[in-house]
Amino acid sequence: MAQEQPIDNSSHETHEQPTEAGPKKFRSQFAMDFDNLDEELSKVPLFMTDLPAEENDTLAALQSLVFDGTPEEVAQNFREQGNDCFRAGKAKYPDAIAFYTKAIETECKDTSIIEACLANRAACNLELKNYGRVLTDCSKCLKINPKNIKAWYRSAKALFALDKLVETIDCCDHALQVDADNKPIQDIREQALKRKNVIDEKIRQKEEREERERNKKQVLENAFKERNIKIQVEDKEVREKANIEYDYETQTINWPVFFLYPEYKETDYIQSFNETHTFQDHLEVMFEQPAPWDVNHQYTVDNVEIYFEDTRGLNPKLIKIGKKLPLGKVLSLEQYIIKNGVPSFIILPKNSPFKQEYIDKFKK
Image (tube, rainbow, N blue to C red; front, side):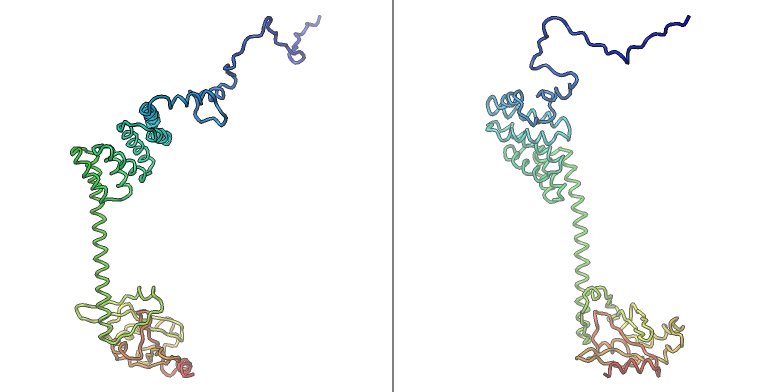
């Protein structure tokens, strides 16, 4: 005989919840929905974390109680709420500031409450780096009580953060007249003094450098005038970088000089060409070995000529100079104008087709 299998009616039948007999239970208007407890609690002033968007009669009633009592009681109440927020940590500092502000704005005649609220609001703003507000509140606080050491301390901290070092030291000196042994204030003063000394030394060194530069420029200007040297500035940046040095020992000028080779579009830069040295002195060193671009070995001391451009007037001219002339003699010529503080000279090989072509351009 086949055994009977148990029947599972769960997918075929629904069990209806039995309804309770008797009268319906009373539900208070203040009853909470336990399935949405967080949402329900957020409507209760005691548990609110944010102000509600809609009107809340209970909250409004509680808020009205805040302003019940004398101005001194109201201010003290706001002060205590501010203190609670301050103790709760930095995230609550804006709320603490709001409560201290409300206390200050009351008609409280007890200056000790206002003094404390100003000092505490300054403490919040100090942590939030609102240094201007710190100084404003500390100033008001010290007008009420010039011996409020916390206000002096917070003022000094704000001034130091703003890098107002002279004011920081002065503030600390006033504070130490109130409390000569106050270690935190002594520390701030020491830090400000050290930083001030460092900055003063940097300023002194900078001023000395600038003075040396001014003297150097003046010495060079005087030397230029004595030698009838003319400098035309077309590019200020290049002129500033032109490293013209006055040798105080020999009382001579060292110039940066360019030698130009237009045939190959090449240049040589002489970093320090003393005005007493001749062109031949430098050419002998430069052409001791053939230049890599001088494929025909035409550029030798004996086979080159030196020119400079006379830029006066509408049509520039080429002027040939002797290799045995010293640099200073050429720079003092009436025809020579130094562009941007760097003299330049054109080097051409003798008896070359390029030389003649190049010179002919200036004859047109």
